[in-house]
Image (cartoon, rainbow, N blue to C red; front, side, top):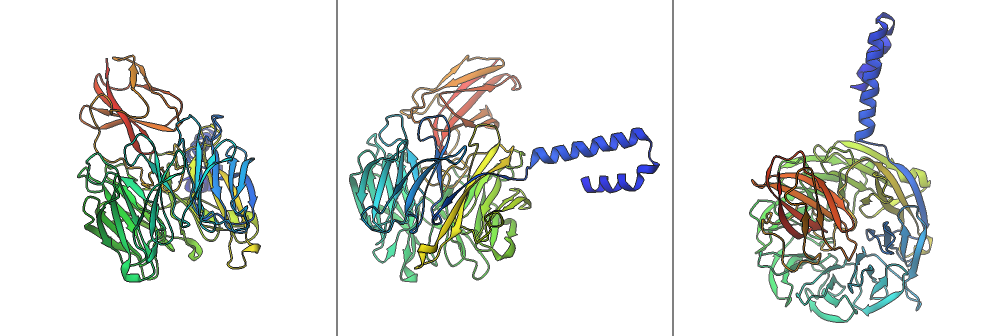
Length: 557
C-alpha cells in the first residue's frame, strides 16, 4: 500500500492541488508510522564472545534479586563453562568451569532456574555430560550448592513436586537409558529408573497430569541404538510406574509438547522423530490420534511449540522439519508452511511471542546459517530477519531457539540467542558469540527457557477448563485477594510471590469467554482495568509458568 501511494504521488505531484498533496503525504506518514509500530526491524543491543557454541537453550530469570532478568547458559567443550549474564547490558555476573578436575565440560543442556529451597532466592540447575554431574548453583553468586554424580546427560531438567511431599524434585534423562529423580533441596537421589538400557534419554521429562486425577506424571522418549526400539514412555510421577509406551519410527532428540488439541479437557502429546513424522498421542493411554509426515529427509530434531495462533479458540502446532517450518491446525490440516532460505535448518525449534503487536503469537527461530527469522503466526509470512553471521563475519550456526522477554523494562521486547562453529574432535578451534536484540513493541508472552517453562510443556495453550471456585487449595502463592470487590473502574489482585516469578492473569465472563489478558505480572499485585466491562460476575485465573496458581471471582458494578 505504501509503495503504491508513493508512486501515485511521484507521478501526479505536479497536477495535484497543494491541499491534496499534504493530505496524501499525511496518509503516507500515518501508514509508515503504523508499520513501524506493528513490526520493528531488530537491532543489536550487545554481544558477548565465547570459546564455543551453546547447544542447550538459555534460561532467563531474576537470579540476583535486583528486579531485572539475567541469562544463564552452558557452552560446549572448548569453553566448558556455565555463564550468567546481565540481560540488560551483557555484563558477566558469574561463570563456572565444569571441568576443574581435568575432564571436558560438555554443558549441552538447557538449564532450569527455580527457588529449590524456598528461601526467596533462585538456584540454577545444569546437568553436564562429559563429567557426568548435575550442578546446583546459587543464582546470585555462582557458588556450587550441591553436585550429584549421574550417568551423564544431554536431557534438559524439569522440576515439580512430583511426589507431593511439599518439596520440589528435579527430573532429567541420562545416558544408558535412565531417568533420575533428584531432591532439589540437597541434591540427594530420590530414585533412578531404567527406561531403555539400549538407548539415551535425550528428551526433557515433560511433566503433566495425563489422566486428570490430580497426580503429576512425566513423559520421555528414547534415542535407541536399535531403530526398532524407539518409544515414547509415560510414567506415574509418585511411584514411577510405567503407564504406557508408544512405538515411534526413529530416534527422538527433544521434548514433548502438551496441549488439549481436541477440546476434551485432557492433554494430548506432540512429538516428532528423525523419520520426519510428527505424532499426536492421547495423553491418558498413548494411542495415536493423528500423524503428519514431513518430506523425505526432512527429519524433526526439535520440540514442537503450541499456541492459538489465530485466536480462534483452538491450538495450532508449530514445528521445524529440517529445512521447513510448519504450522498445523488441531485437526492435522496445514495452516502454513515456510521454506527456510538457503537450505538452512532450525534444529532446536522456535519460540512463540507477539512481535508485531497484533495480540497474536508469532514464530521466531534461529537457523544454521546464522539468521534469526520472525514469521507471522497466522500466515507464516516473514515479519523480519536479521543476519547475525554477517555481523560476526564468519560461520555462526545457531543451535537453539531464542529467549524472548523485555530484558530492561522499557516496554520493548528483546531476544537472546547464541551461535558459533563447532567441530569434533578438533573442538579446540570452536568459537561462539551471544547476541541480545531489541525486536520491537510486541506484547510477548515471554518465552524464557527451553520449551518455555519449568515443566517443559512447550505450549501457550493452558490445559483444563477455567475453574469457578474461589481459589485453588494449597497453591504456593497463598490466598488470592481481590479488592475492592465489587468494583467499578479498577480492582487489584494481591498474592504472595516468594519466588519472584512472572505471572499472567486471564479474566472470563459468566459464559466462560475470555475478556481480558494481562501477560507479564511481576511482584505481588496486579491492577486491572474493568471500566469497560459490563456489570456482572467475572472469574479470573492466575498462572505462573503455564501452571494455574489459583482462580477466583469478582463483581463489576
